Length: 520
Image (spheres, rainbow, N blue to C red):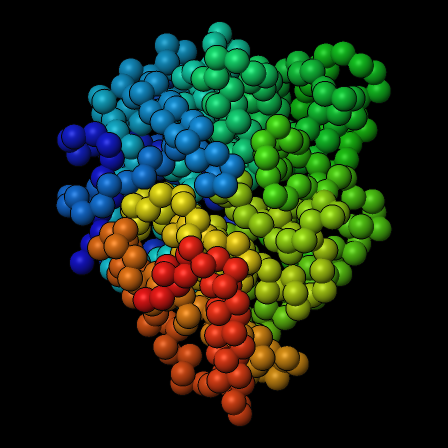
């Protein structure tokens, strides 16, 4: 069985997406998974007016699930409805006069990006276990969503300056496609694009930061090594260049930039974490949503060299543990995680994931065992967010009424599903760590597994689950049951279940009006 997503259009349509190679290792094409069709050979220059090369992702019929708008923007917890449909109608058919080709209109009236998700891939993702087809789907969805969002920004941006900036990106792409892909798909670029689109369509409020598109273009041009001239205005005496870091000019006012600027100006490079795949981003102004938006977590300010060194030590230790206990998850984290953003002081959370910043995790400095668990946990949120962008798993609203053993407050169905999914992965990770003799891992596994086992029947019983959502939850339950093959020694699992039952009763006493939603 294949789960087909469907755009909001009445007739099946296709949407083209740029075929800019990813700088990180590519996943092998899995059998039975529809792959993008290359509209141009990789690396070939587009014809005049065509813009960046395009790969076409086509639907293969069927209409069981309606795709959630891939350009809807805004993480679920940062204002779901803001910008949800913004840009959906802008530039759907004609494209811009300037020839900028961040558009789906390879065919007139191109609709939203569509993906076909087989039951095999859905079950693989539901298990939380890394798989080539699951990783490929997550990355393809992220790319398509980002490009649709950028298309909407370009269509809504007034004047010719945006087209000029994009022309520089096109020129850089012809020289170094990988560099441009990394800049456009950098996590912070998504936060900027969503915030900019929101401001472009807001009748009141702060103006959109369209100048940042110039920073994206300059960063791509510098990385591609092409000759160029551009003038940008630093903010607060600093110019942020995504994926590179900060330029610190020696005088205020507009800054004339060329291909030699990174070497001739004072710079503050982005800090690369050991291992080469992931950066520690404490510089980009869009590494998290702007302060105007309410959020439970905030990024830390720029770290000192001592702070960077501390993160290097903890990151190296966490990777060592992940590679020792669960090498597949270590590889998945490397493929799906582009940046880690340090959390600010005072936050109680060990980590957070913002859907707008796909490929990024906010995390606080912590001991390697805890950091490894945080990375496993948060990467699952990113996977599920990508899947929910193309498949409707449920139709519930955001009313918090369900018990989540890992939190004290009631949760909506969406939050409970996300939490159960992330904790299912944690239970598997701790089980593997325990088999390698990690101290305290069996107790962690028993506790987390008991939590997941308690909420899976509640999830399964929710009438708002779609057919696809029910299959997904069934896949989660099947993965949880397989843990019976390697149970913890003694009565640790039974002890964890008894402790959880006490917590459930206490929660029901504290929330008597919601007790009915705890029982299956």
